[in-house]
Length: 76
Image (cartoon, rainbow, N blue to C red; front, side):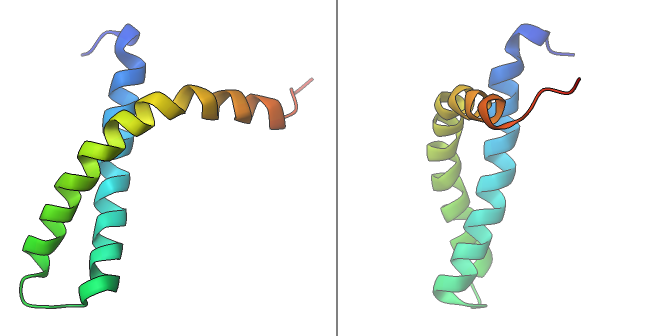
C-alpha cells in the first residue's frame, strides 16, 4: 500500500483519471456523435484531458476543501 503522506497525490490521480474519462467520453459523443472511430476519438481526448486534469485537481483541491469547510456547519 501507499503511505498516507501521499494522499493528496493519489486522490488527485484517481479523481482526474475518473473525471477525465467520463467527461471526455460525454464531450466526444456530444461533438462527433456515435461514429465508427469514437473509441479512438475518445481515447485521444481522454489522454489530453487527463494531462490537464491531474495538475489542475492537485492545485485546486486544497482550495475546494477550504470552501467546503466554510459552507458546512460543524456537528455538535
